[in-house]
Image (cartoon, rainbow, N blue to C red; front, side, top):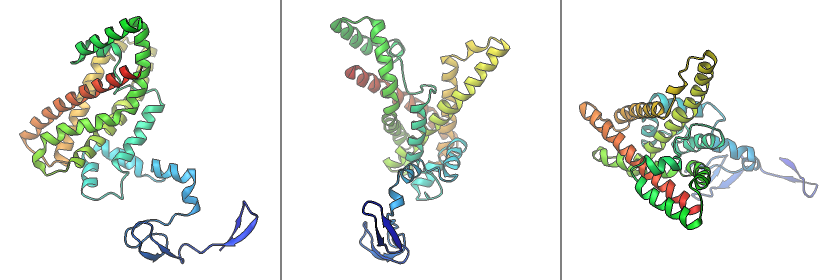
Length: 294
């Protein structure tokens, strides 16, 4: 096969990758074709190094895999993690890959800030609020700042960091699942995979879809002058988050862990408690990182 060397203006002959003999970079096997017949490693071509190929592999949206995987996460929580843990992976986007795509959308677009917490909430409405108040008052006194000025700087910084630190919540959220279902013979990485799926579920349902839904509802309520906007407050959103996460934990408990009967209800309640603790730990970590980077 003849190709032109663009830098030197010459013509060179390259072997056809389907007929040429290759030595696998991963396992050392000698083979012909595009893929190693021992480990499956692909022979890299020039087009594989293009930016388009990089983005296609990262986003995994060249076919309907992404949408099918996302619908499974929403409609059958725990199924993707079960398939991944048991080695059936080629038909779906990998859980971590799905998470990064959704987190990228969450990072780039103005959606509900599920994983961010304002300074005022940190100071007065969290279990660690006493520590937060002590640290904040000490800092503004030392730096001669007003609370209002510091709050503006904190909230701006926290919003950016929260989107970058969601992976911390994933790891922390896997710990209560590991304890609650410790007798189900799952590896720690399996619990992390489920926590990745849970976080992806929240990003899709309670950040992306709920944001779009609330924008539409707000427009309609404002247009009809129904006066229901006041009910779309933090309390309402909290109820939505609790109900959707209970749904996920119930379905995942049956599908991923194989839990049945009344004990499943108990473990769902314990799972919600565990998620609350994990979220509080994440919020404290977010506060500390924001505090020490300002």
